Image (tube, rainbow, N blue to C red; front, side, top):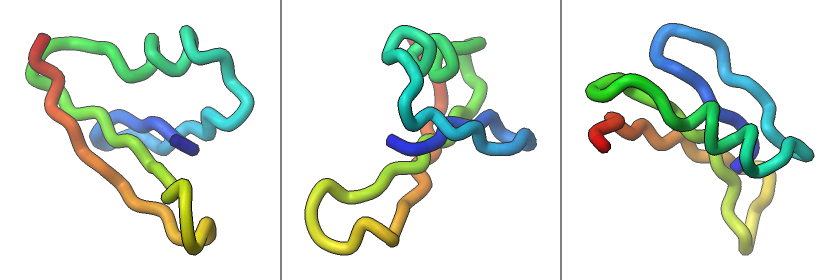
Length: 57
């Protein structure tokens, strides 16, 4: 994972951050959307993908 963002807000670079801090950024209010930007572990590392997740639990 290279970045975390909230719907309607800019993405925040998480490379080099402590895992606890990144998890805190991912957690939030129920039924809100968090966006994770990831790069593949194999192949072209220049290509990233954004994944939207709706928080439930």
